[in-house]
Image (cartoon, rainbow, N blue to C red; front, top):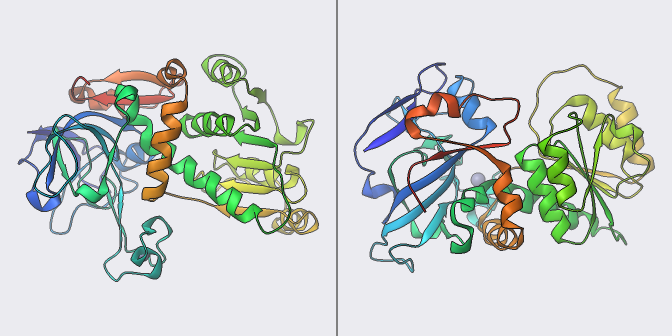
Length: 348
Ligand SMILES: [Zn+2]
C-alpha cells in the first residue's frame, strides 16, 4: 500500500511510497483511510524540526488527524464494517505514570508517551491503517468527511474543560470568551464556545476575508488589532497563537477571576513586557493561566457530539483545500488563505 512517510529530523525527506500492509500488532481493527488533515505539527515534522520514527525504523508514517472506514472490525470490537472512525493519537507511557495509569495519557507526567504520526508510532496517512479497538472513536456518520476535524476539536474540548475546572475554585459565572488566533483551532474553539451559550469574540491579525466571515457566521464578534484595545475584559481567553506579545496582552486584559488557557506552542520572540509585570496582573486579579495539550478519550467522545451539533456548512468552510496523497508537497505547504488542508485518500 501507499503511505506518506518521512525521516524525522531530516528536512525534505517526505515521500509518497509503497510500504508493507499495517502490522496486526498495531491493532485488530483494520481501517481504510478516507482523509487525514494537515496541521502545523505535520509541517514541522516535514521540515525536519520534530518527530520520532518507531524504534528500530528510520521512517515514520505521517498524520494524526484521521478519518477512515472500518473494513475489518476484528474479533474483539463493537465496530461494524463500514463504520466511520478516527484514531486517538496518544498512547500511555510504559511505566506508567499515575495519569497514564488512570487513562489520562494527555496529562502524562514523564513524557514517555507515544503518539501516532508524531512520536514512535506510525500515523494515519496510509491507504490502510490498524488500530486497537479502545483507541478508535466512532464518528457521527452524518459528519461525512467533516469527521476529519474531530482530532483538532478534541484539543479544544479539553482546553475548555480545563478552563471550567480551574474556574470552580471560586464563585464564577463566565459570560464572555475571547479566542486569540483564527486558525483551525481558534475557529473550532469559537464554534464549540458558541454552542455553550457564551458571548464569543475572536481576534486575529487579518482584517477581511474568510476568517472574519466565519466568525460572524457563528454570531460571534470579530476583532483585529491588539487584545489591549478591546472594549471589554473577557472572562475566558483561549490563546491559540503562541505569540509572546498576544500572550502577555491576554494575561493583562482578562477580567478579574478570569482564566487564560494557552493552547498555542510558540518560541522566542521579543518580550513585550517584563515577566513580573505579567505576573503582577495575574496576582492582583486572581487570574489563572493554564496550559492545555492533547486530549483523552472523554474529550474525543465529547468532540464527536459537539462537532455533530455545529452547522455542517460552516464546518465545511474550514476545509479550504483538498489534496490528493501524491500531491503531499502542496498539502504540506502553508498558503495565506489556508485554514485547514485535508489529504483525501478515498470517498466517504
Ligand atoms: Zn505518562
